[in-house]
Image (cartoon, rainbow, N blue to C red; front, side, top):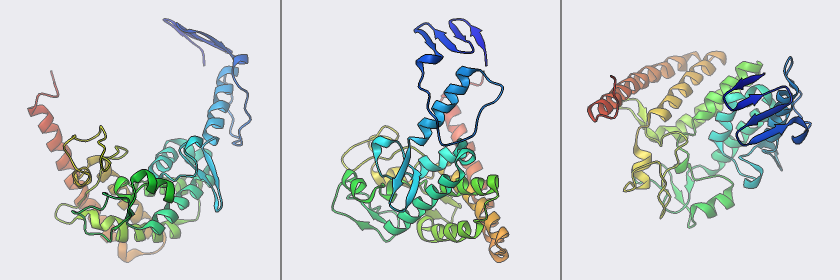
Length: 295
């Protein structure tokens, strides 16, 4: 890859811009575990590729029951479902299939064990679930359990999209595990957030952290409570639920659970219709408020 335009010049062994020049010999020369290589490229791009792989592998956490992708070595032994899932969808499924599957399994194991155990202030009054509120802050909860309260991870369903994509990409024969685990989570974790009136799920906007008890984040109105942040029916998170239902339909088909295929399909249709209406209403609101100019 060669490029020269304006102040940017990318050659075979250097890159220059207004801040200076970086040559190939200035860069580290790591040897990552992943054996996938670039071909027909420049020495600089080949080196950058290996640096990127090495950086990815620096996020691997070695735990007692196996290795998984963490969120960076400085975070230690912590499990973040959506970080793992989105990373897999964006490329790690293809590069690291085994550790991606191990990572997804790790998220399901930990979340199942915790159930609805949450930190102080994170038991939702508006959701009928078997909450177990611990007398500790969220930071203390994170240190104890190595993950966040479920209240802060109501886009958890994203794991299904990642896992199905992984199994399909590599022809991995784990559809029975995915079906049984997905069914468990829909019945025990996702159902309390489901509104049968419109087929949508309550839950935060995906990857947008809700407020803490005693501390506000920037992703939601400052006057909102934790309950308010979670009781929205976020379009992004409901898109994840729709994808999750499609995955469950596929998994039910592949494992011979024909009686349940139509149930998942019915919920897909109802949810997708409501999402279309919600999206259209949002666009209309923006237009009426003058936030969008079509001229």
